[in-house]
Length: 450
Image 1 (cartoon, rainbow, N blue to C red):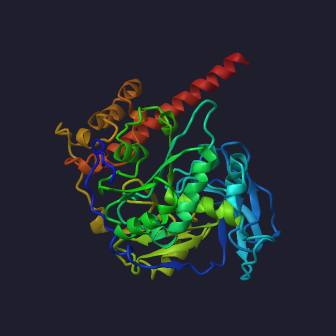
Image 2: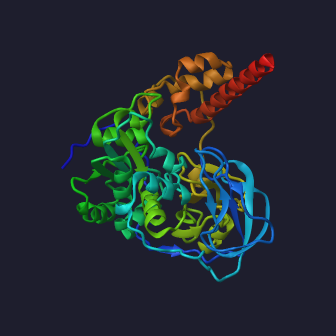
Image 3: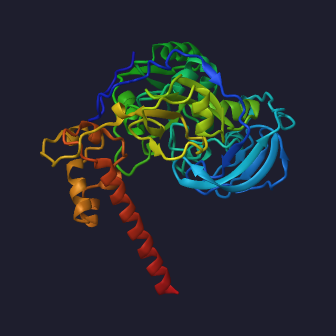
């Protein structure tokens, strides 16, 4: 049994997972329209390769990658391209979508799905399959997976960690996947190990998911030395630095990527998607979404096509009660509040929460009492109590000295603050101000050179 290491700070948040943790995954009936965004990943947006009136098949490429840090987008079902237009996006506000009218036949592109032996492929061939499948980090970061699996020259990765912690309250989509598709998760891990030439592997899961731990422990037996680690349920256990610390006892220095320690961390749902893309040739065209919260009448884990609207999901779950106060894409700690139920599911959409007034009610913020609770809670070792003051005084240079850019916006400080101060909001204001200042300086320099 491996030793468990505690990471710094964090918060003991209520789990709120009981409504969906033991339920089967239900399949969303195909909606009448799908709105497939071309920007579903970090990096350059994909470029549409279809036009209005085109007929496409399930799994067909509809938008191609435009850079190394970019991934393609595929049709979630067969049907007609109605148009290319602007549409609500869960995190960007608005984005360009390929609007698809399903034909009801769900006809696969010729040759899909199929079975391929990944063991006969080279690492470069595997990376190509992963990129062609449109894989991104499905824990929420959406960083293109093929990029993450391409170490810089001279960098040797020896350890792979699959992240199944799923520490956000309410969310159980990763849990449901591990319970129902453990062999696919492990196949994805085997592929990652081969791509990187790594020899050591771990699967980290919070200890409030006993069935997932049991399923993954059994499936992982076929990988020599692979260890499934039951981690304490402590937020944000699923953060990359936190899970590395929890399993290996190593703290990743600020400004460094896990590869600096010879480590790569991938989400368990990403691993299953890798197995689909490489072994079956199935691109990333659907995902499991936890639809929950006290205002959702029938909480469920729903397998939904990319491009379904939040309205489609909520209707499938019986709608919402009259006390709905906030709709959140993702978890309550780091998710994004939504103003439009027509926003479309993207690759990062692991959860949709309907929260009541009781869930979201907070007293008015008070003055900081310098208690230090936020400092103790910060897993990055920052001093969050100073951040609202920096915003008020527009102290952007001081903010850099205070290492605000190292904040991962986990929300532990907000949750722990007895004065209810909106500290994470202050961080976002500071980061935007610094980004705007950097962009202005770059534009001024370019103008001077011209």
